[in-house]
Length: 83
Image (cartoon, rainbow, N blue to C red; front, side, top):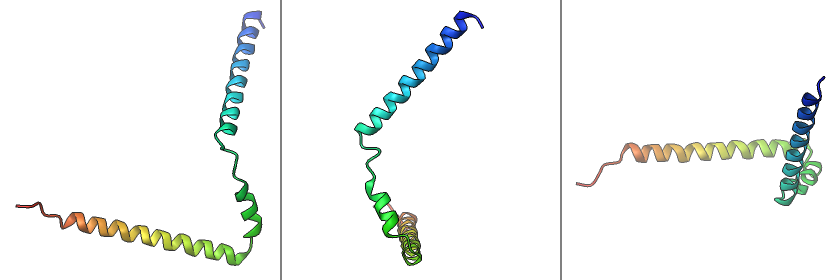
């Protein structure tokens, strides 16, 4: 390989490495990796009962959201501007 190609490859790889390092430092400073409770809760609530409860809560949440959407749609459908 020619020396110009090698220099270009070294330059690009150094730039990409610096970009990755900058992204890591940004993530640490903004708290992107501060999710300690996820691992603790994952070990604490690891049974079948907790999983079933979580699924039920998700279903209830989805039903409530659908109910709100239907109410909004009905309200918009029956809208009549003032005279």
